Image (tube, rainbow, N blue to C red):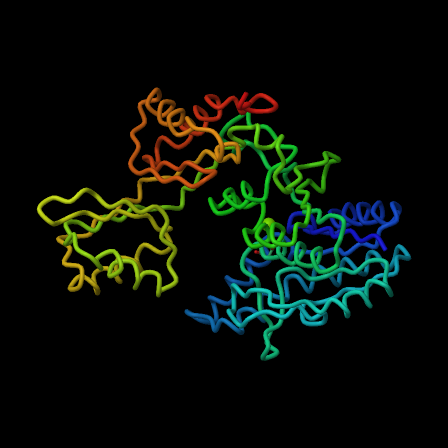
Amino acid sequence: MRILVQKYGGTSVAGVDRMRQVKARVEKGLAEGFKVVVVLSAMSGETNRLLGLAREFSADPDPAECDSLLTTGEQVSVALFAMLLKDAGIKCRSVLGHQIPILTNNNYGRARILEIDKARLMDLIEEFDVLVVAGFQGVSCHGRLTTLGRGGSDTTGVALAAALCAEVCEIYTDVKGVYTTDPNICSTARKLDRITYDEMLEYSSMGAKVLQIRSVEFAKKYNVPVRVRSTFCDDPGTLVTQEDEQMEDVLVSGIAYDKDQCRITVANVMDRPGVAASIFSPIADAGILVDMIVQNTSREGRTDMTFTVTRADLEKTLAILSRNNKDIGAEGVQHDLNVCKISVIGVGMRNHSGVAAMMFTCLRNENINILMISTSEIKITCLIEGKYLELAVRALHDAFGLDKPGGDRVC
Ligand code: ASP
Ligand code: MG
């Protein structure tokens, strides 16, 4: 039995006409001999509307009830779409997360998938030609409805593809695929034919909305080929896949950025064992993700500690630091919202030097000052002033030759 998983985002199911386009794609899959598992998001704007509604009723909505509410968005999509398919004589049914079940932990709002009942899923797929599954939702061990975090339908799609050993998981959206950088900023941005799981993880962690990061982690772990493509044109899109030698030949695959950052400096703390732990442990305990961290050189036994967090976490982080000041003995805490992060990403960097120098030279040529630097095996990130973001994206895209197919070849 050949199985195809197709996940459609909110804009693809936004109304009956759009759903008819989705239906045509599903019929194509059937005609090619596949059983099709269709995973749907809520209609575009619906999840935000429901969240707004929750906030009208409660200043701090109960997380479990909030998840119960949010799952309705996807329930509407699958029921309506299954009606369309049934009217066309297609043997199908809608399925909700708890009906499979997709078992999750009870971390409401950001639940993690623990287990999927494969046997039940296989029974269903044998009985029906198309299963229309609600994305984004699961059920906890206590029998309560859960959701998988914003963009979580991607993860439902990839997880089902892994469970069913599907040939591919197609993620249909309103863009043609994954680009070398944001085409809204850089007119020469190109759609990539292929990208590695690791590169895609870096893009997603930078806040690129095209795939939820957990879906990429899942795809990498279970080696699920994922194709990101548009519902509204026939372009084959971008394949997210395992690395091969050809992909390592490309030094840099793209430029990502993140405007959602702010910089915090804890000034003049004692430079002695345990200070970093005292600063960062309570922040970690509060579930706040710290990204770039730089510790200054010591002056007379004292140092500055600078790091970044997302803007949404700023107030919480400042409150923790001031509560904690007794332990760390800081002379003050400064923050700066006028910053953004820009990264060059590419698996080719693993085996080749000089990328960082090229990036710094390019920024120097544009007279852009670098505030902080961090690196990973396949990514170099600089924090710069927010007003230079667009200039930096375009200059780096150009400097690494990303406008040309094949990008900046290593050799
Ligand atoms: N409807 C959910 C959201 O807007 C899940 C998804 O669409 O992937 O985040
Ligand atoms: Mg999405």
